[in-house]
Image (tube, rainbow, N blue to C red; front, side, top):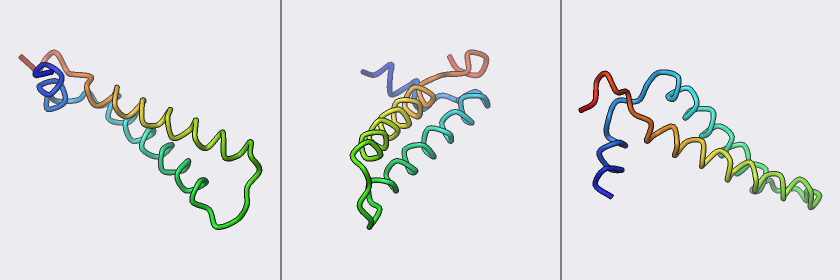
Length: 72
């Protein structure tokens, strides 16, 4: 567990910073679809749930990716 915390605090490479932003954007878009004040088809709600999960996983994996050159 200590290693994961250290990796999360380590510098993140620029490519993975961009991926993290994409993941957060996906999660926010899925959340907006689920919170929409209008009735959506069941398929749209299901897709929104998958988009939230995919965005969360993408953000988490991107966060714990480390830059070997700057991290010990």
